Length: 443
Image (cartoon, rainbow, N blue to C red; front, side, top):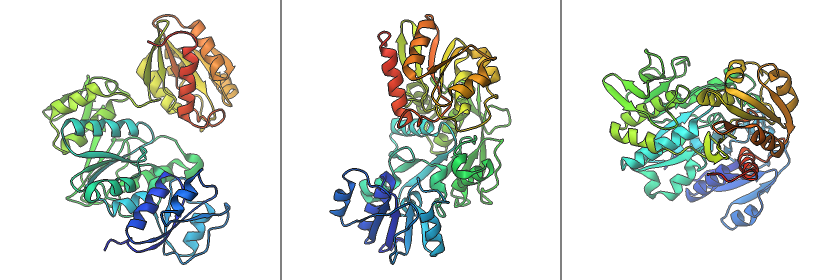
């Protein structure tokens, strides 16, 4: 019997991961209640019919009950009153990812990091598919691992779960032990939840904590500490330096006598380290170099992540709405190089606005600023590149399309969260595309 069978469980959060966990525990003979402050539309009726107790409670009060397990959805931080109350009651607390990993019978490879992990996960899953290796995407990418346990035969036996892992999910993991695990990068992000970069980094390192010597490998950029990797678990580095185990250099990933050509979006110094990690993990899984090369060449970027929408009046249109930090905007500008008309702004997530000086002065023809950050960004950037205060997306696009010349680039890379004007970054990217289409046909 698995350790979480037949438990009396309270699940915090009625979102996608919470409900996936509820269904898995119910199948394993448990008694399950799900609590949220506000339930999504018709979910109450749906899950009540499945035998799941649906509870509603205010922010400060965790429901009473004879629970012996609490599963925490990613949106509930360590300081949430419900989590703290569960700790005070001495209840076992795990994440949905931890729960799923205890039932998943296939192999798990996992990547965490601040930026770019979704693209890495998708590229690896695409390559495994090209190699005819049974694989499925799971985790923070959008499909909870609990869902994969339920929907795949024999809980995924013989299948590789290519898993994107967030710092939120790692807060409550203990035995999650990927065969191959990596930290792609660490940048200042989610500090509103984790307080300090040190605390955030420590959570990222939890991806290695349960790996077993002789059965696992850890992958890290050279500049990230190996503290937290269990003794005996080998560490391989990836990046662009001669001393990296897996090195992106001159359009290829090199490793000893191996050289894997990188074509497409990963073929630059900014995303090259990601290509090195992908090559490393795929090689460990015995995928042939030619298949890895094919995967790079065929890879299509995810929506809103340096996504080329086409050309409008001779201007290349790129949607990078997923760039919700200024570090991500900096990376986009490094990739593109010059002739960029940049739309930036939204709700700032950081205080340091000055570190893009070089990229703004060399790559940006003009910046068009929107949202709550319009004023602060104007004050910080006006001496580095021409800046216009536009307020809204439609005004910014109109100004940019009027100024841009054929051969120029119009880039939406906000460097900020979207929640001042949009319900999420996807809606922001969609609105950007709609606004551009008003000025000509996208080809």
